[in-house]
Length: 299
Image (cartoon, rainbow, N blue to C red; front, side):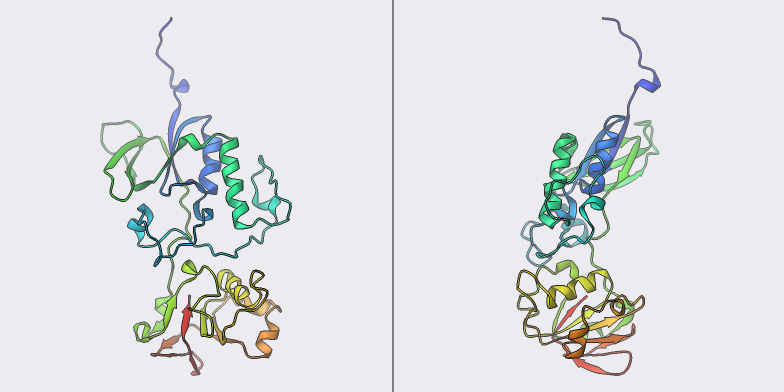
């Protein structure tokens, strides 16, 4: 056999892909033919947020790498979630969806992603249960590659350093809850239940049934959760809550919808505008000076 030194063009670059969700999978599918790829996925399965288990920050049993890093479970979906984008716009161009309906359920999204990974044979490139601890520019002479990537297998594993020519970050941005503390006074004074849409799984639970609920925020997640309370298909309609007060700031998406008008009319949903709210033990004072009794707050 003839031996020779490979030219620079013949040597494939190395590429690290962080995250095996929708973006990470499509990156692997297109990069694997031009680079030696490895994907680090912090969970034990692909799909990212769509790998739904129903756990919350309080109920998660196994503290995986994501929980170790951020103090939260990665899950942010809820039981009755459906997509609102037609399947043709949500799917990849080279892998048509096979579902019957126009919209994906959350289960169908995960099945679609699993099928995509199998069809394009990217699953062998994924190292599951592996978290990326650090990515930095390589300043030493151990390797000529530009990026130094430090990983850890599991929450308690040993750290491992590898070097890559390229890094593609596909870890998403919807897993760590945000609380608008800058707009809230006396947050610690409230003695009721405080939760976040990140940990919302279903409306027919003790935190909400028979309660006066304050929903802070009326953009996409806030409006979608309102629908979960007033028009839940699984439960056949409205959940048995006392009253929902929704705190709205600009932009006010709520005013652009007429779907909630019957609930505005009967007083079961009340809108309070303005950023400044003050918590008391069992109530909240709003920017207009009005005060409402509250038992559960949902951010």
